[in-house]
Amino acid sequence: MHAEIDIMNAVPRRQHVLIVEDDPTVSEVVARYLEREGFEVETVSDGRAAVDRAKARPPDAMVLDLMLPGLDGLEVFRQLRSFAPTPVIMLTARANEDDRVLGLELGADDYVSKPFSPRELTARVKSVLRRAESPVAVSNASKAVTAGDLAVDMGAREARAGDQPISLTVREFDLLVFLMLHPHQVFRREELLEHVWGYTFGDTSTVTVHVRRLREKVERDPSTPRHIQTVWGVGYRFEP
Image 1 (cartoon, rainbow, N blue to C red):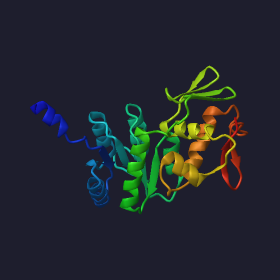
Image 2 (image 1 turned 90 degrees about the horizontal axis):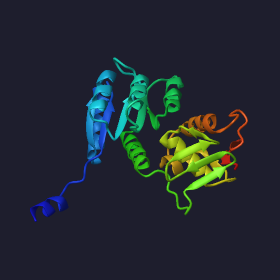
Image 3 (image 1 turned 90 degrees about the vertical axis):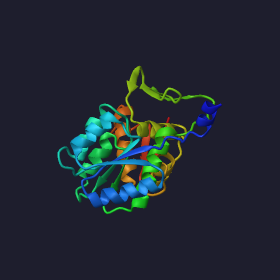
Image 4 (image 1 turned 30 degrees about the horizontal axis):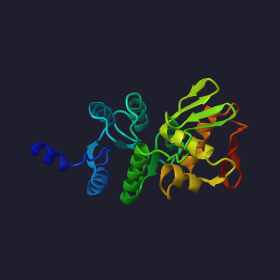
């Protein structure tokens, strides 16, 4: 009886977010907002400590500043991806966009530019966690979709080009599935951001970078794509 009562009264596990930020003011404000939303939050202030902590206890999500002492954010991200698929939101204050784009190309889930709204960052964290737990919903009875030699098994979350498996990040896979399920339909970047990333605000260059990465993986000639086509001035459409 007591065991049953304990189970019924068990408190759900709080999702764990690791903040990697060397500015204590920024770190404290972000942590306060996330804790207010029910997250369990840890903070570290340098890159090596971030990698060590993530190895000891992989977080459900990481908020990662690019400019860090010890290891910079990009190197932290590379090492993290070698042992955990943790969703990552990158923070950048750099005027140069190269590092932000590189972070997205490495597979980061999102980025936020400083100065930023802590409320917006909290919404981004919720979004990447929601997407990680519940990828693009599939209502089709069939779990497979094909286009030419491109085949996607949505149940197994696998993609193949002919006999060759295609290695895709979670977000790349979700983007490909969404486009393939809506052939010939043109989507603006803002619409893809909403449908695939789960939020209605943000920099649409996130979508642009992911489309480019996806083309490099699924198109025979990414410079003249057959499937993922650009509709100039509008967005993208998928042609089977």
